[in-house]
Amino acid sequence: MAAVSFERTIASAKRTMVLSEIVRLAVDSFLASKVRFVLTALGMVIGSASLILVVTIGLTGKAYVLSLLESIGTNEVIVDYLGGNNVTAGKAEQDFLTVEDVQAVRQEVPAVLAASPLLQLHDNVSIGDGSVRDTLILGVDPEYKLVRNLKVVAGRFFDQEDNFTHTKLAVVTPILAKILYGSADQAVGQHISIGGIPFEIVGVFKESVDTFGQTEIADQTILIPYPVARYFTGTDSVKELYFSTTSSRNVEATAQEVLRVIQSRHRATSVYTVQTLTAVLTVAAQITNALTIVLLLISSVTLIVSGVGIMNIMLANVRARIREIGIRKAVGATYREIRMQFLVEAIFISLSGGFVGTLLGLGVPITLRLVTGFAIPISLWSAVIALATATLVGVIFGTLPATRAAQMDPVESLKYE
Image (tube, rainbow, N blue to C red; front, side):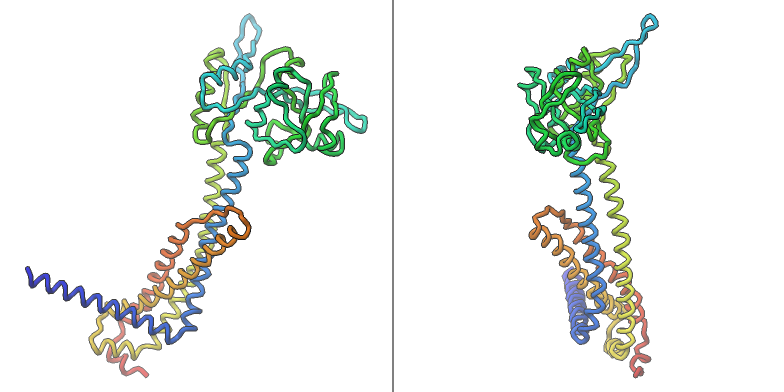
């Protein structure tokens, strides 16, 4: 047993000596031709840097798209009444949502942070040039601002006290303010007539992100307190309810709880639906990930081209060192040792270029973060992938030159001039 252990120790020491000798020979080879080494590794520098930058660009684009969607309100839950009439004696009765539904959801669903009914009206509003235009009017609660993540660009939004006292106040969109009074600031304090009742404009609002008309808010919209909007309908019925949850992680679960509470308060034949942005966020993330993968595949072409360059340089290197190979074989170098020597050289070139490219690829976004202050996402996994890919390229494209060097006949190699 002791003899076997001693033999294994000797064999391990020999392997270590062989590997250290191979690395030393590779370093000596590069020092003897520094320009060729640098030019050969340049392709890997560009390829590795581009790979990391592509990942950074993809992550930045993903973060930007998701931030836009989050600005609309990722915590938002919208409940709609779809129908489902209960026909009695030939007369169809609608089962609309009510303000009491909002109160019931608040009591039974703790995850609801804010809520607002939405009552939609249309009325003719006098424009600055004397003409009359049909304008969208939405009756909402003060918490509608929080639920929809609205921004007040001038003045203020009406509050709970205004809601309680049924004060005739209005907030308008910037486009409507400009049409009526020339600017947002000039619109604040003015009065408009809705249904013959004067309303004071106390603020101008806008959505956090341009939704290109894909929301309930049009370019020319007036928001008024919901209790006041009920004067024009004479009913508590609404078609939509808006809720905001305490966290974006519990939106779907909260949406189902809200739907359960509302359905329990209405007829079984009535149909209600809930809408959230969770599905949109998931699709957006999938699209940006797919685009990042496509860009990565495109950038990998640079790595392949640089790998072909490494292979050609190593083949030329083998032809230039035929006598060296013959001498090494003559003094006892094995097929495996010769093959390993040239394979290590190819990996060393590729990995050196990949390391420099990784530093450059990480340096660009880090510098931009420090200079601009933008939170550019940086993926350390992209650096790991870049280095692993550089090593793989060296192995794949260095195998042919290494094998060709190892297969050379020592006698013919020594005769080569």
